[in-house]
Length: 229
View 1 (cartoon, rainbow, N blue to C red):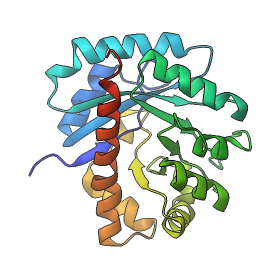
View 2 (view 1 turned 180 degrees about the vertical axis):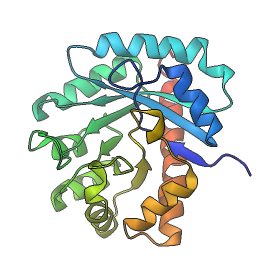
View 3 (view 1 turned 60 degrees about the vertical axis):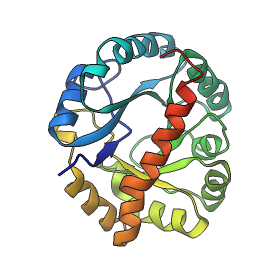
C-alpha cells in the first residue's frame, strides 16, 4: 500500500517537542506518511533562532528521507495585532508553511487570535480554533486559510463544531496530529476515525485527509521556489 498519511503540524526539540527533526521524519516514514511539516512554536523572541536550523536541516538532511518535508512555524500566543507582521517575517526568513495557534478551549489564547489568523494573507492554517465563530470561518473561506481538525487531546474537543461550521461556510479543512511526543503521531486509519468522529462522511474524510493537504503542499512548494530553502 502506498504512503497516504499527511501531517502538516508537529513539533521538534527546536520548540517543545521531544524529537529532533531527523527522528520526526524517520518515525513519520515508519508510520507510512507521504508528507510532513515541522511547525515549531515561535513568537518575536525566537523566530530567528528556530527557522535557520530547520531550513539547514531541510537542505542538508531531509532529502535523504523518502518523504515530502515542509519547513513551517506555528505563531503561538501572539497578540492578534502582531500576527500579520510576524507571519510576514516568517515568510521573509523562508517558512513555507505558516500556522497560527488558535483559540483552543484548554489554553488561555487571546480572544481575536482566530479572526486575525483568518484575515492574514500570509497565514496558511488556523490550528485547533476551539469555539470558532461564524465570521472567522467566513473570513478563512474568503482568504483560503485552512482550518485544522486536531488529533491532540484537549484541542480535539471542538472538532465537531469546527467541522460543521467549516462545511456550512465552505472553508477548507485539514487534519493534523500536533504531535509533541512519539506517541502523538498516528497513521491513516486513526486519522480517518478522528475525521469521521467529527461528523464527516466518507467523501469528506478523503477531502480532509488527502485532497486538501495535497493542495496545500503544492501551494507551499510553489511558494518555496521564490525563497532559499
